Length: 340
Image (cartoon, rainbow, N blue to C red; front, top):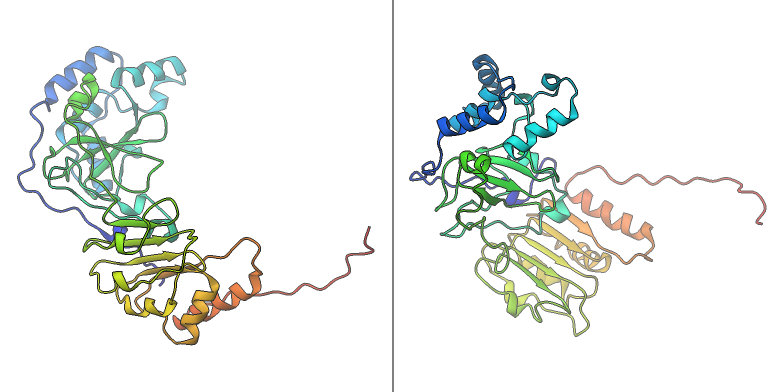
């Protein structure tokens, strides 16, 4: 479906009205400390800060504005002096974006292909400091740890979090964020990790993997909160999907070729938005007119030595059910010359 997104990428933060800034948030201490460390830095003007707020569509929190009033973090301000730039990073403790580099770390900023995104799930535990999300309109990314992980001010914290706490979005993960510091003041002062807590567990029960190295049955995956069922390499008798029929939140099913006893059981999974099967399993569904019409995306998994043309034929039949453009096949004919 054109423009569709997996459920975790549609999830918005929950409101926790009681969230307040951490006691350690101290705008004046932060600004004073930074001016001592960066006596020659050029700060942003109020007009520049206001322009950044207008572009982002959100007011910058007081601590972040205090930071930029001390240094606007533009490269031209140090005249290409690499040592001065490194000193500035050392002074604040991270690579600070300039005001033009600030961005909202919402779900759209964290692109992930459907076949990977559909197998993710996000949850927020009652004691979480950070909400389990792909992204949030209240996450303002302002820096980098030097390794590709983004630092952000969190204005939509979890049930036990502080408004304005500092979180890190790992470049190696598609969802979630980890708490780094209770406030920007703490981050600059080096007071990290005063309270443990990220965005909670993603699996189980929301994601279950049945294969030779993980869960040993579909029954073991059954849980009212199950969202993703992935059936991998399987050496025993093919598996039945009967145990997961009727689960209210099941939205993703991936099954390795040959792992299902009866592919037609998929028709009873009425809430699927993503389905990944082998070409033979898709053939069964197509011939029976049983492809779930709730799907927003689909994939065909085949062994590496499988002839691609039958896979294209199956794909085109699936695309046809949704009126999507077919895969074009082009035949090239020519003379390659004598064989060596």
